[in-house]
Amino acid sequence: MSIEAGSEIRDGHTSPQQSLSTAAARNLATTTKSVPQMQEISSRWLLRMLPWVQVQGGTYRVNRRLSYAVGDGRVTFVQTGDRVEVIPAELGELPALRGYEDDEALAELAQRCTQREFEPGEVLAAAGRAADKVFLLAHGRVEKIGSGPYGDEAVLGVLADGAYFGDQALLDEEAVWDHTARAATHCVALVLSRRDVLTLADRVDSLRAHLAGARSLPGQRTNAHGEAAIELSAGHVGEAVVPHTFVDYEAKPREYELSVAQTVLKVHSRVADLYNQPMNQTEQQLRLTVEALRERQEHELINNREFGLLANCDYGQRLQPHDGAPTPDDMDELLSRRRGSKLFLAHPRAIAAFGRECNKRGLVPGSVDIAGNQIPAWRGVPIFPCNKIPVSDARTTSIICMRTGESEQGVIGLQQSGIPDEIEPSLSVRFMGIDEQAIISYLVTAYYSAAVLVPDALGVLENVEVSRWR
Image (spheres, rainbow, N blue to C red):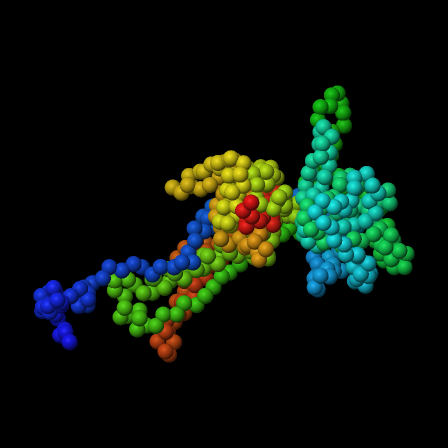
């Protein structure tokens, strides 16, 4: 049985349609539309909370007091199967070998490094024993164990991938371990003995001379931060001689050049002419392009090798979690490394992991109101989510803590406003013309960078586990 169009079945009988269907009526109605949506848009708290400093000439120079702190870097390794080797030039990170440039000698020293593996709880070096080896930690976590005020065991710090310890053995034949190094996880380390170094130095004149020079260098008077000391006198009476002094500066201060993110937006003139109601197509295209550009800007401020926060954190301000997952103790230690911390930045999964650790201890982190948003906080310092902080394949990430502001010697953003065709500070949209295919082109450009004014303005808690549920 066939049913004619415009009829319906009612009580088993066919009856003609009496009113216009909604499907047909929709063809004559004006629908209510949303503007184009974009899932990539995030809260971008870093861009919102970072103080932006105007830069003229595209360059910002950070002048600091002269610092004598050297040999504070990390060692890089290469892995082939289960075999690990240190890159020879990376041995220059050791203070005793800093500035030594004989590639052949460094290559031989790298070959003399012996690979060893340690299980959790195994002691690598015992306090009070002779320190005659240098340990290069390729993988794993090592705890530095000392004595507490009442003779109990205390964890003084945690070392992880790329760290080294025992480097004093290369210069001091009477050096002893002032703490115990114990594996907290399975560890892979390369061990370089003092005997191997001295044996090679007997054959290589340049190495022997370098080590002799390193032993005889006069100690520079520095403050606790490695800066050249300012001589002062206090508490004296009578006609004591007041010391003479001056404040020395770095001879080659670091300069930050503004980075750039660009794209060319293309819109066909037919689209721009005929399809601009009820929304302007060109404006919507530009809006979404600018959003994507700002997302990339925040990503670069976190991850760029030249000026990104993760890469430019001082090695002395990098911490390792004591138990893998981010605990309140780790967050407290991160805060204690700097004065006036203004904010944390963490991947949402790291914030969730920290919340789980607080739950285990029966703690409830507070929150602060930021522009009408309730942001989780620890010790009154807001913890802002940032999905630009990477999570590794091993389910580890980092938590950033920083002090901000130029007057506070903190972390600042750099921009140059007032550029031609600017639509937002340091962001411009330039009309590039119409080609022979009637396509309109716009050059969208953003200029930006970031600077860390003093090392303790920025700290990072590294290798934070985000997948532990126990």
